[in-house]
Length: 122
Image (cartoon, rainbow, N blue to C red; front, side, top):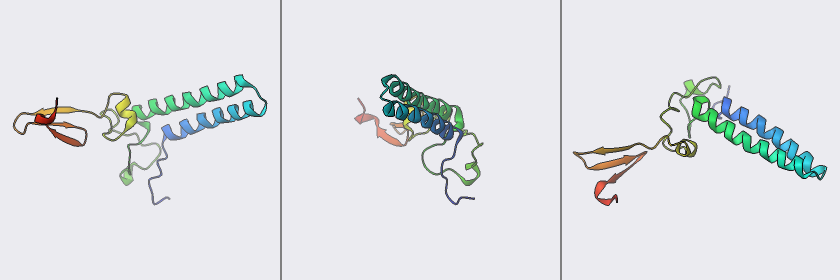
């Protein structure tokens, strides 16, 4: 058993598998000087990025950083994925992880992990 959270997730391994096939097809295209094979391989690599992103948003990926030890298993879904991870670019691209909250008493707006006084917000 590993002592570190290596990020082995369904999203990661699926994306890796699809990208490996796409890279192989693109490499074959380079070796055979076939532009359609190179383009097809690169298209498969692009699809791998989209598949990985969708699986991450569905909870089969992992948030940035180290997870709690009980969540290191590959078959453990991420319960926080629906709300979005504050420091995750993929979640931000999907419109998750940024929550604007206005607190009247403190006059502070929070966006993710930072707090900004309302007087400095335009």
